Every structure is written in structure tokens, then in C-alpha cells.
Image 1 (cartoon, rainbow, N blue to C red):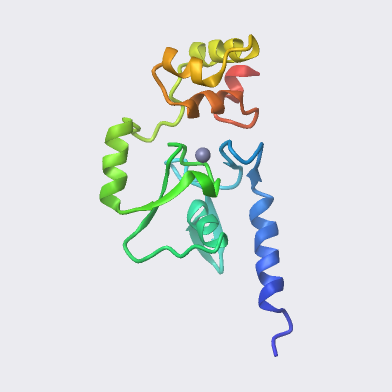
Image 2 (image 1 turned 30 degrees about the vertical axis):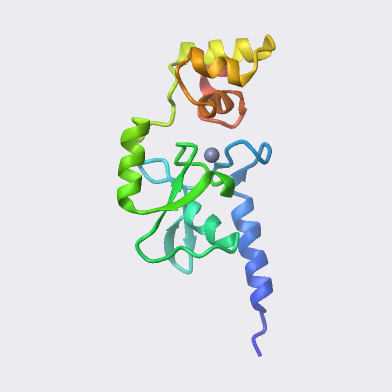
Length: 157
Ligand SMILES: [Zn+2]
């Protein structure tokens, strides 16, 4: 019988994972604070191998990644590991998705001045649903602006 149980190992892994995630609430992006690759995707060392943080999170939440499938982001934020923001797709889906969202690896959609303005509007009581069309974006960039751990923190400091 193993000295360290599988359950214990799983808990240790979860603790390690959670220590690298900034969670504001269930709905917002969960920001990966650990290592990231050049495209902003979280990286995690597991059994001596580097794995994608969002892929690992997907599996931690008891979902299997079938062969030839990728774990993609609904929220367009490669550094996000909120399981609710992830979905399975093929590499082709990913490319199509990128073209549709015009992503090009940049998840800071709003310019600095826009981010500043968004925050003013939210603080003035405008809803995210009202603000998003003003900036011709989805509600994700608006949420991200309001997240103190988000990609706009230097703009808003
Ligand atoms: Zn997200």
C-alpha cells in the first residue's frame, strides 16, 4: 500500500494550483498568477513536465480532454483558468474563434484611456450591459477592467 494516498496527492495538487489563482468571484476571470508562456497561457509543472494551467484545471474539475481536442477560452483571456470560461474545441475551432474575435493574442482589448473611462462609468452606476456596446466589446473586457487583479491594473493604479 502506498504511504501517500492518491487522495492526499490530489489535495496537495489542488492546494498548489489554488495558490496560483486569483479568484474574485465565480463569474469573473480567474487570473493565473504563476508562470505564463509568451502567449499569456498559464503553465504548471507536474511530474517534471510543463502543462497548460487551463488544461489542468479542466481535468481537475473531472472532465476529460479527448485526443485532438483543445481547451479553449470563451472569455478570450488566455491567462484565465475559470472552468466556467473554458470549453472543448479543435485547433480549427480555435483559429476560427480567434478570427471571429479578432484576438491575435491580445487580451487587453481596451486602450488605457478607455479602461479608465470604463471604470468611471461603472463607478457612476452604469451597468456592464450598457457600457459594453459603447466600446463595441463584449462584457468580458468590462469585467476585466473592474477586476483589481486583472490585465488593466497598471492603468488603474
Ligand atoms: Zn475568463
